[in-house]
Length: 260
Image 1 (tube, rainbow, N blue to C red):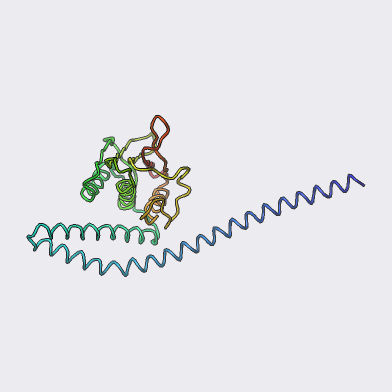
Image 2: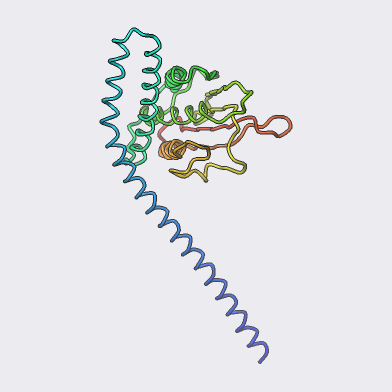
């Protein structure tokens, strides 16, 4: 009789464990559903706002550009340049919002990625003239990719590096490294800012959740989504000195060389 009681108790315990596991799975699925619904609501709302902002923003940009050509006063031109820079920043945010909201369809072809990196780096250097951008890119860097999508990724990652919070006594600097691997190409963007929060990984990237003040949280999320749509990967981390102290953030992109 004691053996049967023990056997029954063991079965009850096993069933209890399975029930607990099932509840955990249900809770996780429920959380994922709520998260998806929340992101869908945010995405739809943000998309509507982005479209509403786009038209008046275009008029502001047109008016500022017209005045900049007509006005000869250099002091006023500086203020108009500030307006134009602000408009470009808002346009970048709007593009990210619309990219996040839109269905991703890639138009891929073989591209010399080096040229695309140089183009983006030149454009961003114009917008952020106080930040030094260093390039170390292999000459042969071909990959099968969607030019617009990867340019969006490069702009997002590079902009994050350029505006990364830094200690007051540090001159801002960004390094872009591009190299060919056996079956993929790799692009690393390194800055000398305060780095990502300790323990932060690519799996923690979420839309509308930024790891630094003033960010929208969309740049990394969209970039990760676009890179993974190419069959590649996006990893984040920090660069450490010899003493293990963080000396900047690092984002690593890997894109398959072919479409296989």
